[in-house]
Image (tube, rainbow, N blue to C red; front, side, top):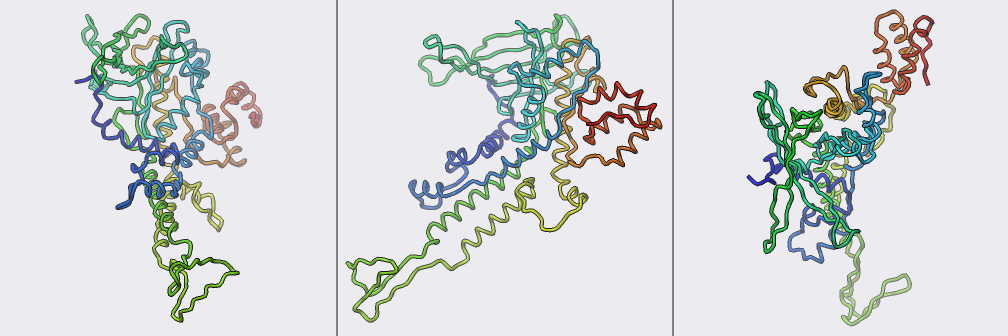
Length: 478
């Protein structure tokens, strides 16, 4: 099997991913795709098709919806839970300010992963160790198109990733010109193999393959460039340090992109718009016609011009479109726009003329919020798994899975209700805490979810907890 072989699910979904990328990129990318998204009409020449495509406009509801969903998810900042005063938390604190060695904060990295999952329904995180100067753990984001192949096996009673193939691009200096970089294609192959002299144990091995140009051959060949065994505290890794991100789960299997149905309707609207504009081009303006006038007679149209013919049967008039053909296109486009709103683009839906209660609005939006809520839970779990790997590099646990969510967790906002906690609810919450019905941790969590306090105020609340409980309700709030 060639090193650049792809998984069968990869081949089945690549077209969907590329289509999603094109639609989200906008009108110019859709236009450049030509007949891929706008087929030619029958017997249409290339010049006629160019004019036909130029008249069409792309109503990019998909990109606006994706931006709205991303803004909704990050309306509140993610919540990172780590033990206080624990030396093992040092790598996590470093990741908060620089997660990928390129200066992206942990929140910015999470935002990128969420945007990828929104776009194509898939992304990945490779957890690696910088072994030269900084000696620290970092994340490498992987696009869906770069995760070429994978395999899982059941090891020690649980499914584990046993093979992973990642496509990469390495920039090398060009010896002929120091200002130009040479891009070299590379494949990183990670495998989980039995550990020598340790029966029942496994280790992660990495191979780097590069495409080498071959003289006198049109295609380049792949050659093994390097082979290594990553180490952690002098011991090989017991698993492949990689986490999949998806809209519903973090398993290797590919899930349906959240915006796939929206994209299909959006492209249908684009084709309808092209036909509608094409029809308008030929029928919108009335066309003059005459009968019984000399063929060589020059006729001008204007308020000061009169057409006179010596023939008594001469006639003149205007051809004007009066049928229902274009109305059919208008109704079809209106239907697509309503479908776009129903499928998720609430920002594009016409505002209702009557007042709605908060409960009615909540019910009307429950479909979209349930999709976002499921995605927030899934990505919170997968990003927590990535952080477990980062914690594990400096801990004494045998396996990253041994680190519980009670010790370390990363939570993306899953509450999309913009209403704040009422004063009555706040009073009842504090009274319940004072009476011992709820713990102080539960109080803090409810205050944060109700947007009474931000994450940065929780430590201050913790410091004043004793004073607050002995008095009436001394809770620091903004």
